[in-house]
Image 1 (cartoon, rainbow, N blue to C red):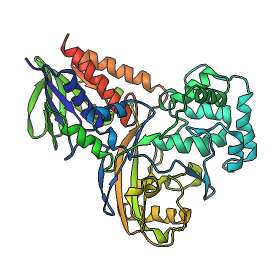
Image 2 (image 1 turned 30 degrees about the horizontal axis):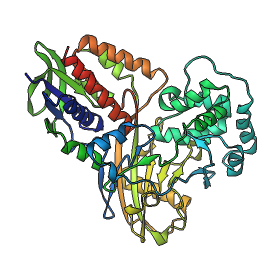
Image 3 (image 1 turned 90 degrees about the vertical axis):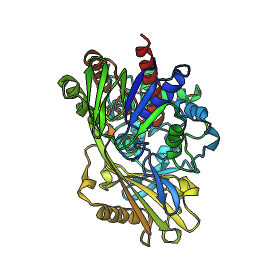
Image 4 (image 1 turned 30 degrees about the vertical axis):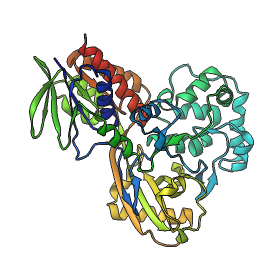
Length: 461
């Protein structure tokens, strides 16, 4: 008899679980039901029309340095559709002016001393301080540390605040002084542990092939929703139901009972919860120990403001993919993608498009603005940074509340505790997604694959 499986959450993780479950059980496919609270699938992958082009409202690409996204696209038959950023050059704001990022950066860590010195992003003394990393004795404290702790002790505070935090902090919408090194920057941790010098360790990685050539990111002409839409279209045995809000997940004599608004209660042999931890915690009223652990995972909120201008009104050459803004600049903007330079098909010769990020852990100032005033404020900051003379001709605000889980030190131990409690109190329930074991599209695909295998193993015991 076919098994019944319910998946809660229609983002990339939930869709990946459904797809992999179908592939793992082709001879005897289970009955899979996917429940999504919103009116469309995709979760934080969303693409919509702007200035006549399909432009992403969140992630606009996925990482090629890990295999899981690439492998899924090959399976789906869409690998031939890849496009790549037109430029990898980027800038950082220093005292209100743009400075090109130095050559040889690895996650914000400079590995080429002269390029760092010439960049004038940090003071000459700070550049020399960073260079001393190559001869300083190993001073690892012997325990897990944050990204900021590693960078400050090896390279100094200016490198931490003007290069590493703007980059890694922007990727995670977090504070690198709080983010777990091994989870958010494992490449840096590996380099630091294998060598007394962080810079030498990163150079060794590059010499051994750790710094591969070729584009770091790829996307699709139709935007990232092309991936989730294709994934959904290839689900053959999954009933996708949108506009369904789950209320509770409980044990039942015949499996796991899921209650939701507007549909009858359903009992499944296994339930996969692919929603963020702060949402998932609301499903477990009868299990306070599980709720307490899930609520320890903190989140940051962000917004992405898309702005379109006439090209003639922007005096900056826009030679690059965008800019990072350190916290000490005091601006609302944390980063800005020069979207139509990065993806030329997003605008014609007469227009340019910017995608501006605001918000990060500990910085919720943007929430005090309504959409109209937020756009005005961001446009004013952008005008000064990029020598813009005219006004924007189109704008869009995409708000993403509680969208970035913060992998603070001890996060892995916390997630292991959550898994242990789920196994004890709710056998047949599985948690997956960005809250737990990896941020980004490929990491969510990997977790979806792993969860599908765990479910299959559980159901065949």
